[in-house]
Length: 257
Image (tube, rainbow, N blue to C red; front, top):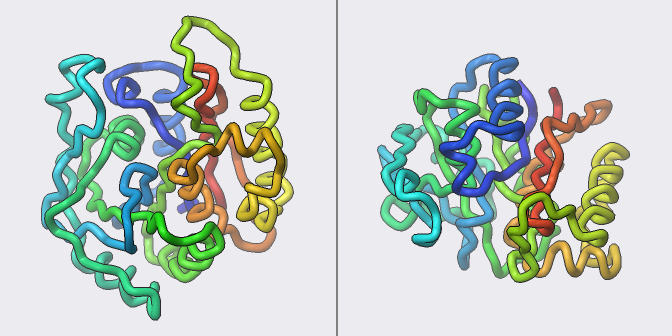
């Protein structure tokens, strides 16, 4: 079982077959069946650390009406996992994690990938929120507390993008990534390969490319939940690379494969 996965898909990836969705499916096919999945999604970015505790977490269609209608009918009917909820709360202590059985479920950052990686939706799933009030170092430290889950059959998925700037997104077909976006994506990939967690945690010190690539931290922070689980001697393996709309990195990686 890999320590963690990091990647993210747009809503349309859910019902599309392309090189990204094929890569996610091919990757998951190499894994032993996980006992459960823990998702840390960019889209559950709230005050406080919460964990989904619903027996059947709902599918959250967190996108607008510009997307194809079939997406609004899509459901990912994975069941929850009360045992994993308890285990995460225990491991996170003394950080307080609030059980949340009503306000969130499985959002598109998660199900756009899971629809191809685990299409049967037969693996229990729990989501952990990102506390928007805390700095990157907090999230890295919290993730490190979850390291024992690696040995308990839990697939840990950070759902986000290294580069995510919606304000500058350009849907022009075939348009290349912005230079600043490509440079930061490549720099982050190099830091991942070197295991330079300190630089990745302190990404705000990496200059103007970082500021354009990470204008808000929500889509970047899930990466820290993945790299914090990397053990000595383990490598980061790229699953797929690319860009969407010039300003969205599609880099997906596994850690500890």
